Every structure is written in C-alpha cells, then in structure tokens.
Length: 303
Image 1: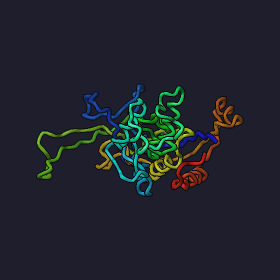
Image 2: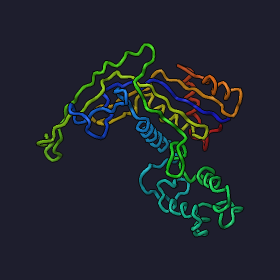
Image 3: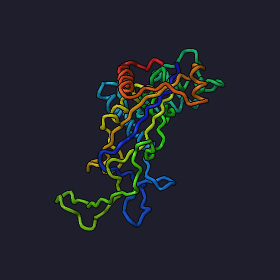
Image 4: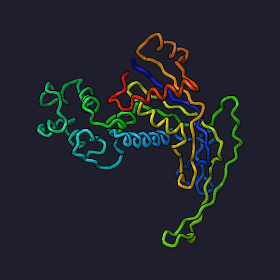
C-alpha cells in the first residue's frame, strides 16, 4: 500500500495566543500578531510543524527510540544511536562520498556499503539518488524523526499548511478584537522590574479556532507523526511566544483521519476527480490513532 494520510481538526486556543511577526509593523503595540493578506490572524504551518517535530523527538527518546535533535553534535559510539544530522564526522564523510573524494576504508568502516558498488558508486549514471536513499533509509543513517520530518539530507514527508481562522458552519466569526498585554523586563539579580524595559504585545483571546491539517505522504512513518498529533490532541503542545507565561495553550478538537491508497486505481481516480477519501471521525478517529501508535516500537511502519 501507498497511503497518503491526513490528520485534521480544529485547533482551539485554551489561553491567549501570540504568534508574532518578528518585526514591529504596528504603532499600536511592540509585538503585533501575524496576519495574512486578508488581515486575519494566522498560524504559520512551519511553526506548527516544528513544534510537532520537537514533540515526537521527546516522546521517541522517552520510549528508548533513536531520535536526535536538529542541532548539536552527537557522536555516539553506539551505531544504533547515530544520526547524520548531528554526527559531524559522519556528515562530512557522507558529503565526501557523494563527491567521490572519500577515503574508502573510512567509508567501509562507517557505512558498510553494498559490495556491488565498486570504488566510485556515485559516478554511476542514475544510481546517485538510489544509493543515497539506501544509506539514509535501509542502513538507517538518519533517525526516525529526521526520516519523517526532514533534514539537510532528505526532504520531509509531512506537510502542514498555514492554519487560518475556521469558517466551518457553527463557528463564531472572529470579531476582529485582540488584546494588548503589558510586560516588563526583570532584573535577574534583584527579581524586580528593570528600569526602562516595559513592553506590550498583541494576543488572540482564548476560544479562537483555526483549521488544522497535516498531510503525511506514503514514505512518512505514521507512528512518529501520530506521537506528535496525540500530544496536540491532548493539549500538551503549546504554540507561539511567551508560553512560560501561560500563553499558547491549544488543543486539537473535532479530530479526523483520512486516507487514500495511491497504489490502487479504484481509490486514486475518485480522489483525483472528486476528492474522495476514506474518513475516520469521532471514536473511529481515536481508535485509528491508537492503532497507528501501537506500531511505534516497530522499525518501520508496514505500508
């Protein structure tokens, strides 16, 4: 099977939310919320994807599974714990291997490539990408998080579109009103307000509802994605800025899972022409999520 899977729902703010622009574009506040071209607040899909990735990495490590952090230099002596993303020496050797400049004794010790590659495998026409994937996936030189969410070696297999205010029937239209929160900088020595460091920021009030969708391609490891979606479902994944002050608590409601087997014409054609998908809602969606999560200890999701 080649399943493309959608995880969807409504992301509802439980506390005030601040998704900033990173620059001051307003005379009304020091830190305005991010808005789209229509002037309505939005949450960048890249921000949500980053938070989901971090959540899956934390839970994978808690389960004793291999998961690196995107930044850092982790040269573990245990080969089963290595990941090229954070293994500087392995990363440099991999790039030299691609260019044909690698020391083949070191290549053999580090990667144990297939014996039929010869001494210059990357010069074979049409074989470069195939052999890259062999090392990254079959030889598991990337951890499960990097294989799913992406790294400098491999594009991610998951997409998260920007989250826009929900327009589903029954949702209350956004009134256009935001809040301005005041704050002050603290002197860490005295624990009191530091002079001349007063600021304010714009926030969305609790109860704002955003449409959420995550698309997992067939190559994605669904159990890794499901770990992060489960955290979001339970309200354990704060978003935006000032989360240590209590902002950014959200939860995924009206949860649904949809899927299409792209390898089966009887499913692919209705999907491409009418958008038909197999859908799991309410209790069935939770049951489906539980089924996916039960495969987390497996090496790779069986497609």
